[in-house]
Length: 246
Image 1 (cartoon, rainbow, N blue to C red):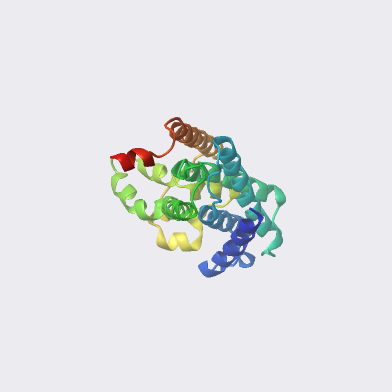
Image 2 (image 1 turned 90 degrees about the vertical axis):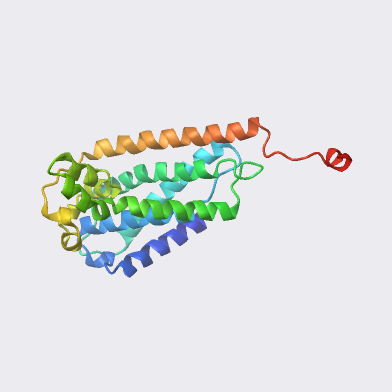
């Protein structure tokens, strides 16, 4: 897992540079938002896969989520920025990132539960699941960008639509924990129609409780899937003697 953490650290640093907004050129709150969002999308790509038992898989879900949040904190604290990062603010941003990553990796555990005969997840399936989740999470983060115009259209009859679209995005939750008004960042102000509208952000506590409940539900589903597979005795195989006599 240490090797995966190192690769995640390098990939997150390179991704921030490719985006065109190096951490050292951003205001502290914007840097916290950028790093936590990038790590959230990249972490599933390095998902270590399900373990052989439900308990070990749960431990792996929690451990990899904590490691990924620690990678984000390390990147924020070690890279020189436009101003020093307050440790309390970094801790708050990474705590919300952890809340987001727990259900994300729990979903990876559900998809990979019992994929192999021993309960462990084969490497090809592990890579496929991580990639699919990363793309899905990127789309979820960008929800206000691609669904914002629709929300504005229906807001005349459904005033809560705009707040719902913004509040449903993990980007909003990471921004709240980072202390950043992300809709007022120059890039979003130029590319998002919602930036010019009145928006009420949800409370960070509500977001954290939502992720906690979602993670618990997904972990339970994964454990049940592994146990159900073992109860059925794994994939059906023919008895060679019976197959020969047939």
